[in-house]
Image (cartoon, rainbow, N blue to C red; front, side):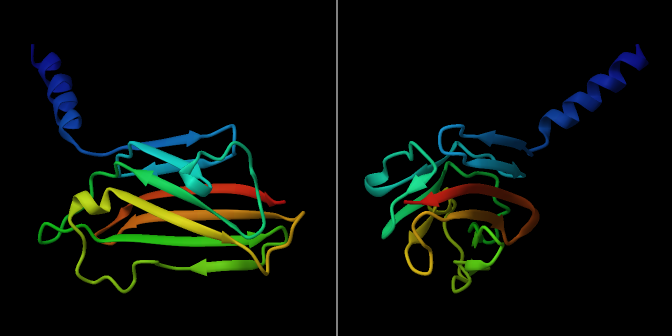
Amino acid sequence: MRSISIPIAALLILAGCSFSKDTKKDFINGLSTSYNGFDVESISAVGEGDQALSASEVPMDSKFAIVFQGIENYTLKDEKAFSGLSMLVTDAKGGEIINVADLFSDSSDGYPSEDASVLRATVTVGSPMEAGQSYHCKIRVFDKNNSTSEIESEMDFKVK
């Protein structure tokens, strides 16, 4: 009897833990995402008018965004979430086009968890990018109160 109750107790303890780890890939536009610690309802790459990107090509002088919806499991401080969002865009040789360590670095007050549940990283496609060239975009969402909670999305794109 005792040998049965120990594994069951271990399963109950693990079931009560709040963690997640997963990877997702959009084979249409190449968006690849991995996350740890957060729960995420959806991650998508959208273009103008919030239409899902149907390819990995984007027009010059346009914008696209990686949208994270339904982010949960922030480590709250004073009932506020402290989101971080970094953006790195590099050319085919690894040269940095855009490099922002934290788009929310000016926000020291935090956000209600409902507001932090939807984050959007918008990439402006323009100079010094060039038509016909390929680029790599990496977006990282992180919890400033829990260094193990993060979402990383990456996508290669070509400017047309």
